[in-house]
Amino acid sequence: MRQSRMKSRLIVAFGAAVMAVALLVPAAANAKEPKPGYTQFAACPSPEENPNSGFCINSTITGGNFKMGSKNVPIENPITLKGGIDVETGEFIYNSKGGLSKTKQKVPGGVIGLTGLTWLLEFFGIEALTLYATTELAGTPGNPLEEPFTLPIKVHLETPSGVLGKNCYVGSTSNPIKLNLITKTTSPPPPNKPITGKEPTQEQTPLGVLKLNNGEYVDNSFAAPGASGCVLTLFGFIPISINGLVNAQSGLPSPAGTNETRQKYNAEGAFSFLVYE
Image (cartoon, rainbow, N blue to C red):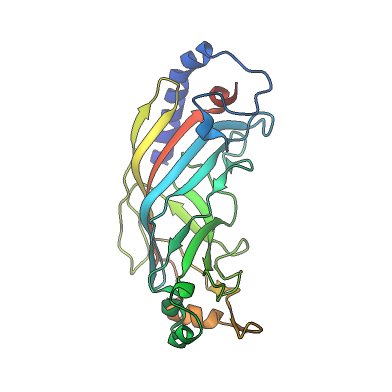
């Protein structure tokens, strides 16, 4: 609650500071694209798309890791979250240009490490057995300006050869991985120990854009469900479900207190009346 109040005061102070800037910027009637200087917020719904769009956000996860069960995946490729905040619901909203980017991360050990089936090398080359994990939204995120920042996700496991099928997931819209990301210190159930994130530095540009740099979200209190939809197709026409095999090899499902994520991030935000009007 203390963190939420602090961020609320920050936004109020920020709003007062940018009002002077807004008065200097000529309004554009029926604007549907961000004005020059605010094009990074194109994923934020304009007033025409959503009249409750109040604050625009462009956030990038630049590094970290995501551990579920016995598998720990480094975040090596930037993941973006783009959109805005609905002033009525406080939830994250976005248009067709926004949401969470579907960015692939390479999983150490590949398909062999995921399944333990070393004989797959006889049928597929090592490159075809490279495994990627892609984080996708599995529900509506909460307000990124409040903590905990709630983020319901599912993880898509895929390969260049399609050896796992097209719908191999950990988590789903009906049973998501529920992250509660904070920059403070966690209080996880055992055996996990508390870990601490990092609050970002703050900077305001002349255009009224709030920049948050070098922050780090953490969460090691979430649970991870078992895999579903993982199908090994032999000889091109014999489908065999390997959900149980993937779960056994990966330690899934894994209860709260056995998983962890660290997400380094940079973000920027601006009030929608600056972006579009």
